[in-house]
Length: 111
Length: 112
Image (cartoon, rainbow over all chains, first blue to last red; front, side, top):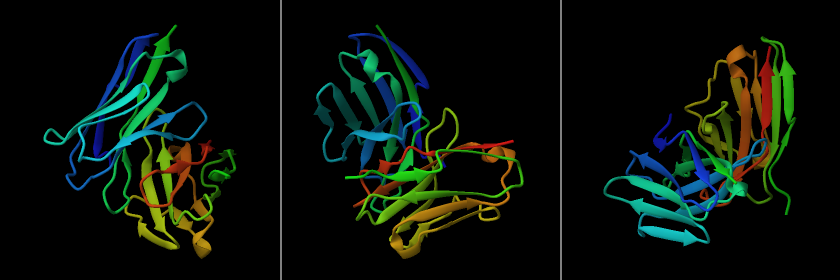
């Protein structure tokens, strides 16, 4: 079921530091790669997404880096804040709208 | 604009009892998903609807799970009979073009 492999499972970062979460996929038919953020008791919410025709996308403090040949992509959170503490999921989908999620990374940002 | 609405938020039942979850997607969203989320895990797809048609139900345990989406709007997911291993959060999501998914807050099931 898990067609997207995510690491690490958990991450602790100091306030102001950089958080990096990695994902790898297998299905070359995937053409849309989002990251979702989930707070306890809530559903996941879209944070940022990228398509394979670009290698990087930045939105504020959040950046996705994409390596098509390696079938890997990563999320970088710059200047991490305590409010960023949440679980982050990478995902991937193809033209069939079949969104598949990674296992998640629990991020803790210490003040 | 109202988001995806799910009910109930929490449900506690004895094993072998039936349970049903309801989802009202965002108005106009033709694609509806039901995901299972175990504690500490990512969402796993159970079933995906395009309008009222179930286009991907390969991961739905059909011996005990069933789903329907009448008139291509609301959807219901049913488990009968429930087993201890079904304890999880059941997430509903909808999308307009199958890219950005909008999730509800989930229905947390505890089977005793």
